[in-house]
Image 1 (cartoon, one colour):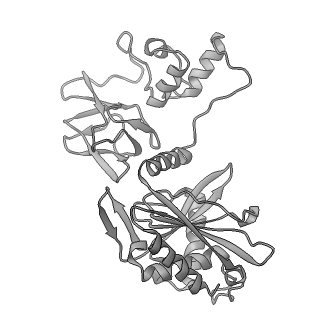
Image 2 (image 1 turned 30 degrees about the horizontal axis):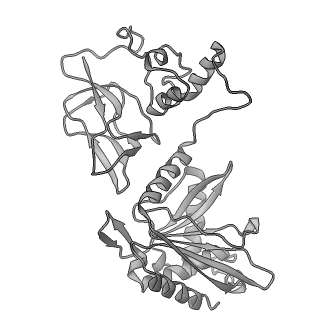
Image 3 (image 1 turned 45 degrees about the vertical axis):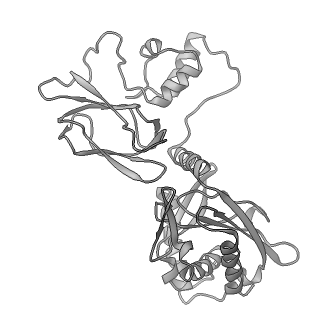
Length: 350
């Protein structure tokens, strides 16, 4: 007989987690205390352990899923019990395939209960919202006309999770200055060849300023602990096809020359576009730019755990550009943020 494995309560007020990684597969034997999956909370990434010895019968979640505290994520067969064969009969009324929480929620929104949901066939090894919609269309029960539902990409689900976490915790403040565009666009050629982009020049200058301002190398742990790192990790926002958004991270940016930062930024940007987001719990500062689209001004959204984000606008007709800083007021106050922005303008010579 198998037992359900549910997400435990990991902190006061915590309501949901994001599944980061499944460490053990269905059919694997596990020991009590052995890490079997990894979740991301609003504060950290946590390995969760098997509560007892047994064999994993199956998972009901996948990496990227966001689930509620207490949600069932797997079933574990205790020692001496028999793991159900993949093609065997299931108990009467039990679902034939794993049903993720998002599929149950999708079905409830359409008036489908659990007993009815268990009878819906799956096109894969797990019942997905698309299977529910296909079943509704075949049964003639669908009432919507000219619409289509589809799950968000894992990349977007991760962003949604972090945006929600940031909205609940971050207290944003925003200030701005104007800078000469030529100070960013007319940097001399690099020893390694080519010229740095305005964003790379900005990231390097910001890193040099942060080297002397420790709070801009810090993140907030919980609500009352400031964790200051020895080096600055800068995240550069990148657009992917289909309106995707990922972050490339240059680690130790304050210890790099402009030439070194540009080489590393190009390498990490290629890697992020190929494999996905690189932002982690130690990414303190973000940089964003929509100059190719002609966007001259914006209020950038700060995504924790970063405590500040810079937005560089496109050049205006007067040869100047807007430089906007959104900061987490729990870490930085207005005077400190203004000092950082003024020092950045001076470092750029703008």
